[in-house]
Length: 283
Image (cartoon, rainbow, N blue to C red; front, side):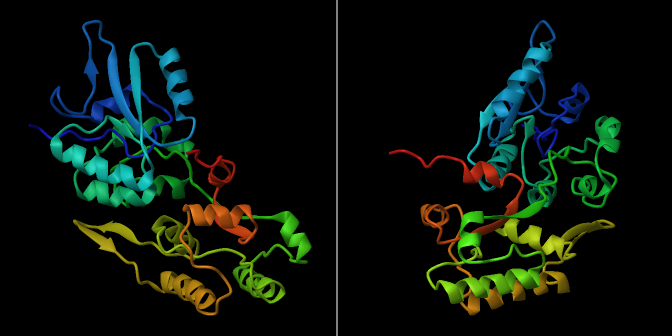
C-alpha cells in the first residue's frame, strides 16, 4: 500500500483546489477522491470550536469540492492519530495541527510539500508566521491558521480587591505574584503547567528561543539555549518560592481554581476566551 501524505498540516483556511494536488495515495487511503461527476471529496480532521460552520460555508460555496469534517479531541491527540493513520496509508487529506507538531510530522514523512499551490497566498502572511510552516526550507508544509499571540487574562474584580496593578513586564509579573501571596496566602496569580509544552514553547519563543530548524540535510534542534534556560529559571524560581501554583492546566481542579478565584490570571493565547467561557461538562 502506498503511503499517503497530508496536503497541509494546519487548517487550510483557503481550501484551494490546488492544495489537493499535493496529496498522493491509493483509493483506500488519503488523497483526493472524485465521483463519476468529477466532484472532489476531501477529508478534514480538526478540533477547532465551530469549525463545522466554516466547513458548511465552504461546501455551500464550492459544490465541486466537498469537505467531510471529523472532529478530534485536541492538538496532542491528533498528532498520534495522524502518525498512525499515515503508517496505515489512510490519513485525512487535510488536518489542523499546532505549529510545534510540524517537525514531528515532517520527520515522519506525513506531510506533503505544498510550496507551489501555496505560492498565491504567501504574501497574505507575515514573514514570521510563514516561517513557522517552512521549517527554514524552501518547502511549505501547511497554510497558517493564526499566529496565536499570547496575552495576560486576569480577573479585574480581584485585581481591584487586592489593589494589584496589571503587570507590564515579566519583572512586574513576578512582583505582582509575590504581592498577592502576601495579601492572601490562599491565592495565586497563576500556575506553571509542566504538562503543556506548547505553552512553554510560546514563552520561550517570546524570549528569542528557536528550538528547531533544518541545517542542510540535517535537523537542528536546540532546547537548552540561553533564552529557553532563562524562561525555565524564571518560572522555576516562582514555583520554588511558592508564589505561583504548579497545578496542571485543563483539569477539573484548574477549572475550579479559575472559577472560584484561587487563580487570578492566565498567560495564554488569543483562543483562551473559548476555554474560559466554555461550560463545564454535565454528568
